[in-house]
View 1: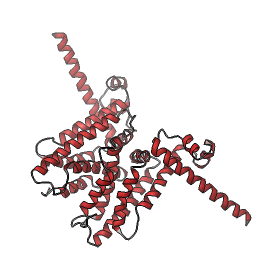
View 2 (view 1 turned 45 degrees about the horizontal axis):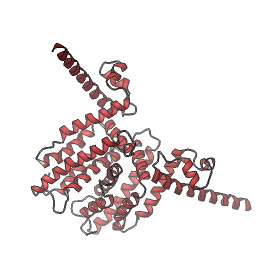
View 3 (view 1 turned 180 degrees about the vertical axis):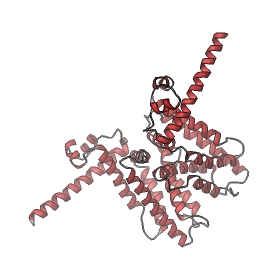
View 4 (view 1 turned 120 degrees about the vertical axis):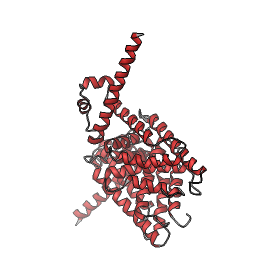
Length: 200
Length: 200
């Protein structure tokens, strides 16, 4: 029993370490960009050696993918998947606000999602499934709003879902190219306002 | 005089050759993708040696950038920049139809525009200016429609312009990941229909 307890303790400690590294990586890549931000910078921030960090994340690519997972996890907390469709779609506005604080990670997402459109890319399946999941989440939210009569006549919940996701992705490119060119949260709020019968 | 005539003739011939190469490159990269499609494939298609092609386009990157310019040129023919705002915005639907025939070039565009968001990327200024130009073109079209009372009340022409471009870009990623996930021309038509007071 004590052996199992020890293993559990060691597992929990390793998990905690992983989490610390991921949070540091998110900060480093968010500010320095994912190309310039180095494994060494991340290791320094958590007070580890590079070798110690590589034990948890053997390559920079593995770490970058884990950072995107971590960002997805944060996004899931920001965009609630409940029975209140309005809270879900308004969560997208809050998510755009959050994204403005992590430009390097948004850049990573844009580049990796574009590269992963190639069928033989290692992250291809991940992105296909991610988009399916995100479309399903927002589609369900717009569907719930339609049931409550809050979606404008003639607006298809699935189409609204595909479009608001495309809009968020496309605005990110314009914003990354020129931070003054678009106000992402406001544009998304306007889009959502345009498909609802209630003011938000 | 004959010397100048000869130079002109040689220049014209070189321009014609460049154009042939670009058209072949567009076809090769559109079908094979821009990573797998090789300089050799393009050279073979125009019946040239690789060395001959490299005289006109010294590296694959130079050729890829020229292919994007060529695509922009085709886009300018598809999306008229005239006084009829409706023709311009409907041109975007036709452009999405055309894009469906050149998936490899769309992929190239998505990856390069995302990579070029980094301020030190060689194509950064090109993409900043390209988006400014595209936003200005569609913004003017929506403005002309507003003047004729064809834009729905409360819709800002500039915002509609930013949004339709973002929508096109974002839909391309979803479409490249899964060709059955979105009907790009139809989604764009629906978006435009949503902001106009006339049916299209």
